[in-house]
Image (tube, rainbow, N blue to C red; front, top):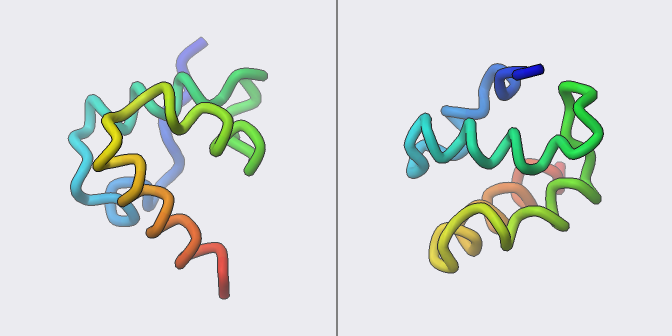
Length: 67
């Protein structure tokens, strides 16, 4: 069952295409709950996007989570 990425994903990582965001979310949501927990996120990050974008997503994610 396809669950779309949560609202705000596009604004959080505008440098990724919609296709990349959907692909990343599908790959990360391994338990198919419709959410991606921190373990799923970082475990799957290296498998879904190129190295340059991995760094970008990780940096932006840490910035958003470190509030």
